[in-house]
Each structure stands twice: as C-alpha cells, then as structure tokens.
Length: 275
Image (spheres, rainbow, N blue to C red):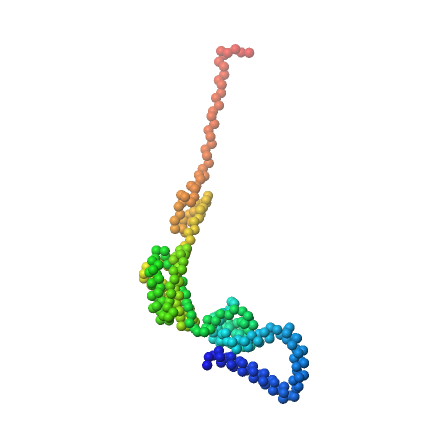
C-alpha cells in the first residue's frame, strides 16, 4: 500500500476511534446529550472567536487527508520552504528541509496558499544545465556535443529525449541550456554535477573555451611622488612612467639675478666754470 494512503487511513481511523470512544464514555456515564447541546451552543460563540485558527487548521487537515494533494515522502515547495513531507496531522504538517530542519506548517496555509509538489503524479522530472562558450566557437558543433554528452549519461531518459537550446548572445559568451529528463527528480542534483564535469572535459578536448567576465582597471596617478610610483610599478604588470606621471620638478633654487653695476660720474678736472 502507498505510504500516503496508509498514513491517511491511520490518522483518520485514529481520530474516529477517539470520537467514538468519547461518545461511548458519555453514554456510559448517563449524561443526557440534550443538555450537552445547550453547552455546545454556548461554546460555539467562544470557538468562533477564540479557536477560529485551530478549527480552521483542523478542518484543513481533514481536507488534506481526504484529497491527498501531497503525501508523506513527497518533495513539496510552499513559500520560502521546500523539503520532504514527514508527517500530516489534522493541525499542522511537518516538512523536513534539505538541511535536516523540521518546519511545522499550519494546514490552513497549505490549503489557502500555493503548494508545489514535485512528486504529485509521478517522479519524472527535468534538470537544466546552462553553459556559455566563446564567440569563436561553432554553435552547431556545441549543440551536437551537448546532445552527445546527454545521451551518453545512463540516468538520462531517451523518452522524452534531451533537448539543447541556443538561448542568448551573452555579454562575453554564447549561452546554451541542456535540458534532460530523469526517472526520479530527486537525482537531479547528482546528474547535473556529472553532466557539468563531462561538458568541461569534452570542451577542453575539443578546444572550446568557456569564457568568464574580465574587468580592466586603470589607475591614473597625477602629481604623485616618485616613491609611490615605484611601489605601483613593483605590483603592476605594466606601468608607463612617462604617461602616468609628470617628470619630477627640480629642487634647485634659481640663481639670483646679477645686478648691473652703477656707473659713477668722474669729478670735473677744472675745465668747467666754478660757482
């Protein structure tokens, strides 16, 4: 029997047994059920306000057990939580993440929200591997190599067959995506890891380059002391000292200007007129 069906039957029979046992106990105690109806009517108002969330989760749990949109062991995704369903109760559902953390999700959120189930009808799933190659590569050759790599993997299904798409002209590469189908979607991470290794090795054999973004950084130093420029030159590949800096200015003081001698008039030798 399917584990999900077994869990639903076990939980439903358990709560039904508790309800029947409680009813039998009330009848055996001789309590009149008509008097309980008055008490139940009085409690209904309090339940409607104070226990609204609890009743909502309880009813949602019964719906999950009856409709079975997911079962124990399924890989589900809801909001920011994804993992494997470990237990479904009438109040909450326990989901274990890939980091082995148990998340308790109220059943009302699973009923009212969007839930993705990777194993809803079957375990077949698709794995995508993205790769970029240099602009000097032949796109048709890349398409053929990626398809050969996918068909050579033992866990990749032949029906549906793997598909390769040339998706984009990237900033520094031609972008491709390899789409393969697996019998069990839980094997997706391991298969993608093996396909990436095979792609890297095959591209290296074929001389196909996988580019990576590169950035050139230029420093323009103006009026820097010679000691700083020498340190830059020690740690840089190429430094043009003539273009990056101005020649150092001379530290010698300018020679003082020579003063022209003042010519003095010679005394008169007596030829002139005396006053």
